Length: 184
Image 1 (cartoon, rainbow, N blue to C red):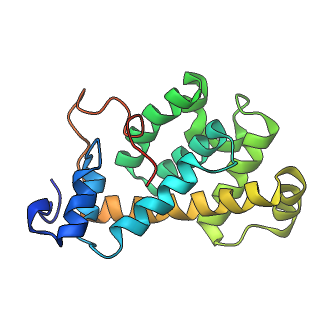
Image 2 (cartoon, helix red, strand yellow):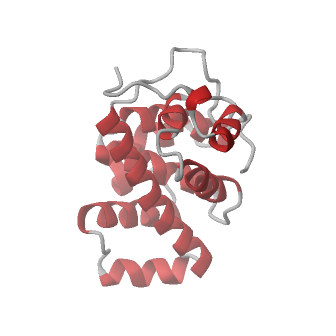
Image 3 (cartoon, helix red, strand yellow):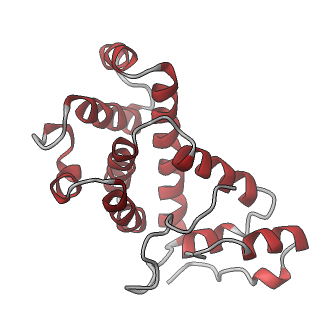
């Protein structure tokens, strides 16, 4: 059970309420974010930019998001992004191997590197120079920037989810939290 009640969308600032009413599906994380009335819209726009408008390969992105969820212990994030990952083309073998990380043979070289980057950034904020050099040679500047932003964004979300104790929606309520979502 969430540590604080979800906001009544009808009592929000009218512009924020109207924005929130357009979100479909209204999953629990989005609903709770409405408490941050001045931040929720920019937050959603930033998330949408990373998810829908980025250059980073969708499977690679979802592997990284799932790794962030596993490392941070965010069950909600892992639950939702297993669904998204499947829809983006992740294999079941990849989904199952994410907790093992870069040591798993199911990932290709780019995916293993992205997992190493994720682990180093989460553990130390700054990745090792050798890892950065390899990442800068492997990924375009835009991809590397997006990779770091995805790691940071989803680590922030994991902290929000775990501290607020956001509940996973009942089975079948949300087929894919991003399927009907429209970029903001």
